[in-house]
Image 1 (cartoon, rainbow, N blue to C red):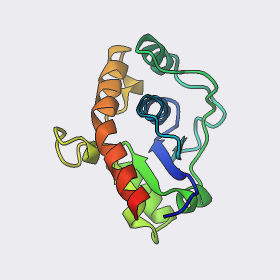
Image 2 (tube, rainbow, N blue to C red; image 1 turned 45 degrees about the vertical axis):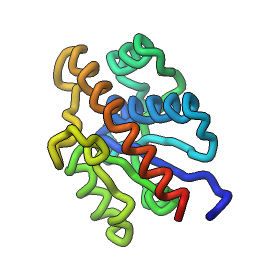
Image 3 (cartoon, one colour; image 1 turned 90 degrees about the horizontal axis):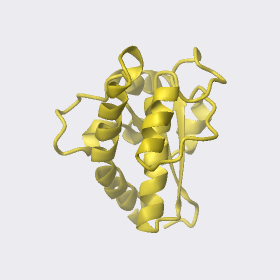
Image 4 (tube, one colour; image 1 turned 180 degrees about the vertical axis):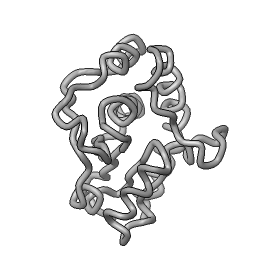
Length: 161
């Protein structure tokens, strides 16, 4: 086992909604469970939102549910981030496919968030709430929270390697 922190990157399309929400939920989950050897980040497969803050609707849902929503700037995932991560958790198959094209040598670390939720339909992914109203962000948050126990079980498996 390594003493280096485990690195987990959450990835969506533009890095302004789903992936930063997942990052903040994971940070809170780790803090609540006393887990200190994991570093979380988030990124997007697209460059169209580079430099933008988190969508205000995402930030509102996070704050209203006790999560941190500050200090976020969207950026695009890089080959180096995929290489350096122990686990890369995507919101949709489209994101997994894009990262596989970017880094085909690491398919084992590229996973879909809903694969960690035993009640989710296999391969279903987390729909992009950006196109809808604010309530869609609540559904996104619910999906993310439901997957966290499974994400952390995978982190424990990685830690034990």
